[in-house]
Length: 223
Image (cartoon, rainbow, N blue to C red; front, side):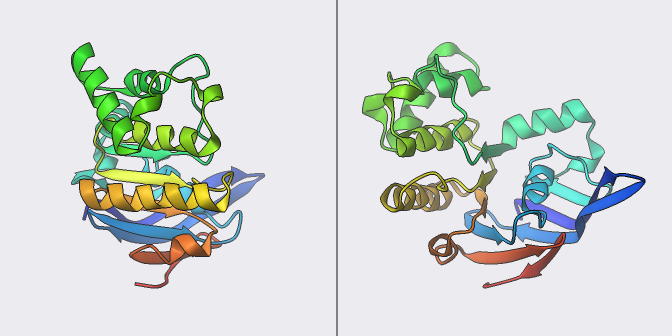
């Protein structure tokens, strides 16, 4: 299992008490598969992604990424693990306005040698169908193209785990379907363990598995 959560509990301060965001959540995501996470707003979906990304440390439980128990790592160690093994695609592309598509990837790279970074960026832009737009800046790209740049950027470190938060919410149906097709293809080809938070039923139908988060608890859906 490339991503493994075991009895993970996460709480936040809430007045005089604590608010439980995740309550004894367990989840396994094998390499080369896609898991959809669904549930109402405020149910704990974003907290689940944050814990899986090692951005937030749970109160209890284990988070294992690419065979490493993240509980054994300090802050610097978790950051290094994240750079090496975790790709994150946010709901909004969040690209740097002054950089070209290729530069968006290069600035996030953690590979040795400038030439290698450039080749890697161009290879990934080609994989997402944007090789001919490598020199364009965000304002020169459509919404779907910007999201594809974001996906390519998340793959710069060849991550074992890919975490995706509502990647098509701001796109029309056609562009959204194209982005989903890309995520499915890249997951299969690269053997990533992909977790996709979504409200879109069309997305759910394309996943290998669906789980539901409700009040911080996880329940299994379609296997």
